[in-house]
Length: 358
Image (cartoon, rainbow, N blue to C red; front, side, top):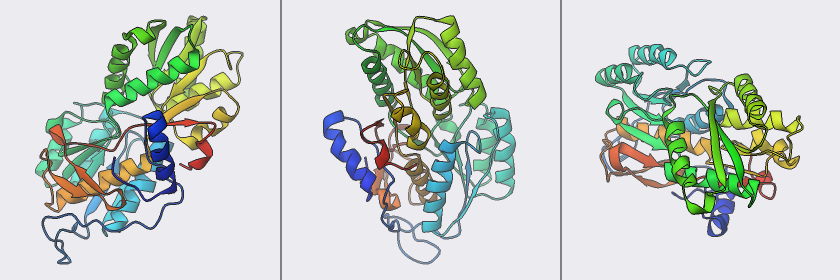
């Protein structure tokens, strides 16, 4: 993972040796420095700099979502300000592929230089994205990818293998040696990242060390708080012997934690997933949840913005092996199919959660 000048990053790196999982923290950040990758010149004449005045639009799965507020408004917006671009965020209030299409079309008509999008469906928005690219926009996906032919680069928050192995390891540790039935509470049924993680979790569960864990159901909360709460409630009604729930989505894990914390299942049914410290702090401290994982979403948006800026400035094309600098995060290398890896997930527990604020 690229270096970060943050106190939280130092903590994460220290724990890497013990936990073999890492992600950056966001507490106590120093003032970031401007990106100086090698390549084409900028409008101001500085060699290798991102052009000034780029219009960079973020289109998350849904607005008013704490995760995307952190990634876009606390990460992408900061990065765009650093390279003197024009930042905006827009999108549907519900996670809907069809709704995203209309926003893409509008952003294209408005002459966006960069569209940064988290896809609700890997194929449904491809036509609109390719039309936007034909009109001159560079497209960067983040958090959830499209078909690689529909974008110029993808910012992968962590490897699918790393996420899957961490989720199964955490639920196994929480449930204990006796194992038992577990379930998955996912986001939308078509979410590219969720489906990849779930398939790899199944592969992980096939390993001998997890032979006592039995996956009995996968349900979908559609990244809606109330529906996720109801799906968690429904799992316990249908599977009274359930020992654990994995919810690899920030909305779902917080909703499930809220349900468990006020139910008779608190302490009896274990929960882990992907969540933010601010969402999960109370549930960690009241012992509803023992541990969960995530990367720093603000770093994800920050990296996505710099990637879009580098693409729109001609510093990279999205070809495997290309290198560029993403401000305070340092140097990154473009991987296969234009994928750029932020890093591995970090595990949050009662012992470290107060070191992070996002």
